[in-house]
Image (cartoon, rainbow, N blue to C red; front, side, top):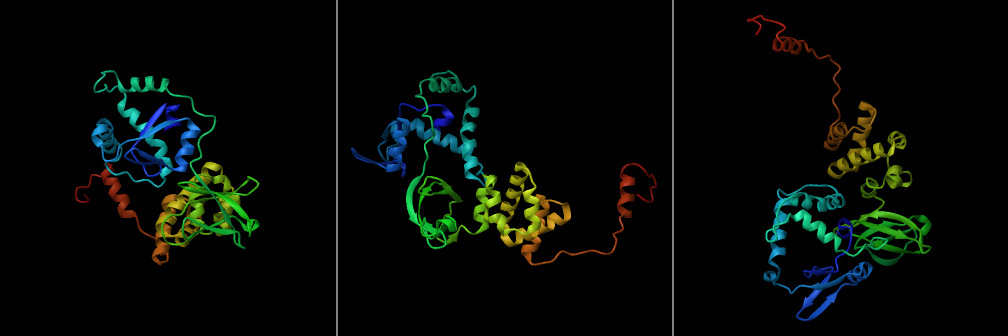
Length: 316
């Protein structure tokens, strides 16, 4: 939000958000990550009294307005990061020209006035991550966030690495400060392994530059690798998104089979063909090959009649 606003407010009041802190009477406790955040931006802050919505009625009303305007009907999306980037732009558009309930001036004009009172942004953004160290096993892997196994690569076997845990991505950094690899963060109680190509595929859609050295590339048949290697960056991203969406619904094996069928039929990974072929593959049915020619003369005759090419009442 600070980057969207173009500056930092002098003071912010938080409503006892879990990752910010807690207020019990006069005693306030904040999290380590939030204290780092506030220090980075030079932000003075306070916490509201719990269970005291009456003290901030206009804020509570705005929450309801945002919910009704931005989340009704309930939105559906595949990428929360992309959704989050678009959300800040939505509300100012809704306020364009709308008069403030008390001051009468347009909300958009007041918004610009408020921007002028902000403190400048620091030179770099705050990295909202938690840093820990992990000792890799003999295969170069480690566990984090429960039963989720991530790979730092064989070259990091039995070595310590630093791990930056974000909301969406695990970034593995060697002790020399070089980024080793980044993995899409896994959630839930079920064990996962980053060697699963689908997990890395989700990250590749946003960072296709890692395609050449990815587990996904190693897991695909040579025909598909050759096609994707030859794609420009935009085409590669589109193909990877099509594979990701299909694999998320129908599974990796069915999607690979569907991609091969799409390549054979269209010469590329066409999303509609991929989805249909993957669905057939997932169902366990083989494609039906029709050797007998299909007579379309009846359709030709119907089109002639509709276009006024024939006036035979008996035929109509």
